Length: 383
Ligand SMILES: Cc1cc2nc3c(=O)[nH]c(=O)nc-3n(C[C@H](O)[C@H](O)[C@H](O)COP(=O)(O)OP(=O)(O)OC[C@H]3O[C@@H](n4cnc5c(N)ncnc54)[C@H](O)[C@@H]3O)c2cc1C
Image (cartoon, rainbow, N blue to C red; front, side, top):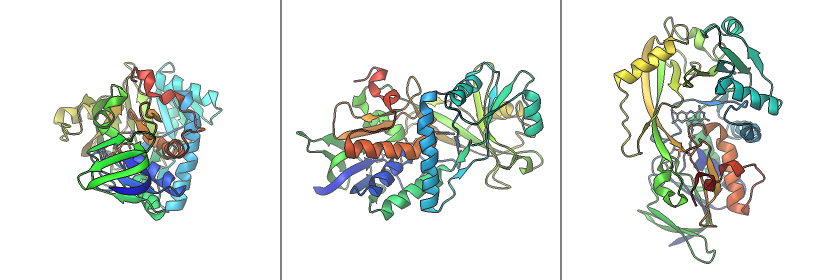
């Protein structure tokens, strides 16, 4: 049995790589175990871009965490020397009473966040790629933008390694258990069994398998990201001209998208926010079908000038969704030596480094000053 670690991190995707980074930076002896290679595309943290924003329609309770996350993303860029964020601005579009608009505005007002309200004419004049209906408005937030998930994970792995973390890839955890009498944890992989004082479990879409005893009914959802080449080229879709957006229709369905960040040939990415089908990491259908492309193309054509144009590529990804779409971040209710972070419900990436900070707090001190009461697993009827 190999010993001598303070903390083992199970899963080195978005959240696990952040935890390894923050733990190692505080001097903890860290072992990270990842099923796949470093920065892979079989979980939830791939696809070139993720939206970040502060006027959060999902709840004003998230705003303090977002403010800290912005600081920590800036620190990550500085320390790793990588370009992680492109703060190109963002539009939250819909009717004034839609959750996307009214919820974003409520958060902006509650936390005094800089924002502007635009009517349809103003949206069309300032952002000519957008074609809103006359009854639609938008909250514009200049500090919104996008994060690059692969660059983020790579930067966090790099910093964790530089700070002494022992990160092992292609080494899946097959079982783990808490040892009795506060003696920490024991973690087994095909290569051996390791012990440590504490275990951080960040398994993404493998939460139902790794954290069955939480009793939380997670749903794993197959989601699709599409890249289209606008008719006439990406010129009007560069980040200086085309912000990120989330656009809610009268049925409550949300379409979101990004500027073209990979130059000509990279295209503009669009997706449905919550139109997933239930799957598991083993059963997910990675093929994107013609009727799915047609549905996305029609939704893009109804909202944006010169889209859909030509489909360049389409890629699947998984959400791990909780019944109320809020996260699970907490000490494991049954095991003092275990901390969990999962159930990010399709909106976790913008929180990655602050989740890393929270996990380091919980693993090393048993408590955090960050407001995480909303993320307790027992709210969902689990243990
Ligand atoms: C299409 C799509 C669009 C999204 N858009 C946004 C957005 O715009 N803004 C936003 O904020 N969020 C967005 N999200 C959500 C965000 O990307 C996720 O919340 C976040 O990436 C989840 O990170 P994670 O660490 O939980 O999962 P992952 O990054 O998947 O990491 C989990 C890791 O655990 C590993 N693992 C699992 N089991 C084991 C085991 N037994 N042993 C070892 N390793 C194991 C996996 O291989 C994986 O690497 C989006 C997600 C998707 C899929």
